[in-house]
Image (cartoon, rainbow, N blue to C red; front, side):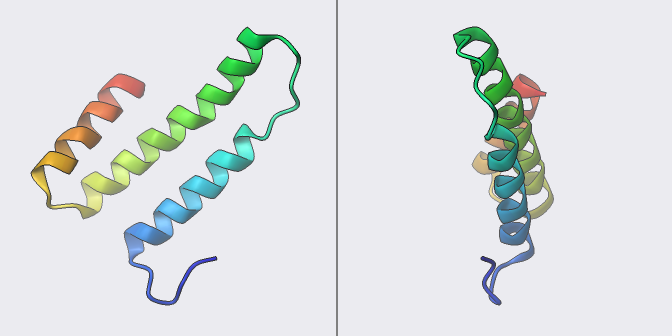
Length: 75
């Protein structure tokens, strides 16, 4: 649960993480290819959302660069 002292970015990360894990909780089909793709879609969507939070809140150049690379590679 969110702490009263959470920053806005942390609150966003918590929400994104919860949604990503909820969306990854799939009914497995026993088809490795289907199950892998169905899990990777929300996983990568979550990564892109988190990277956008970094771009909105971080001033650290290396972290921002990594976030930009995540968005470019996974969007």
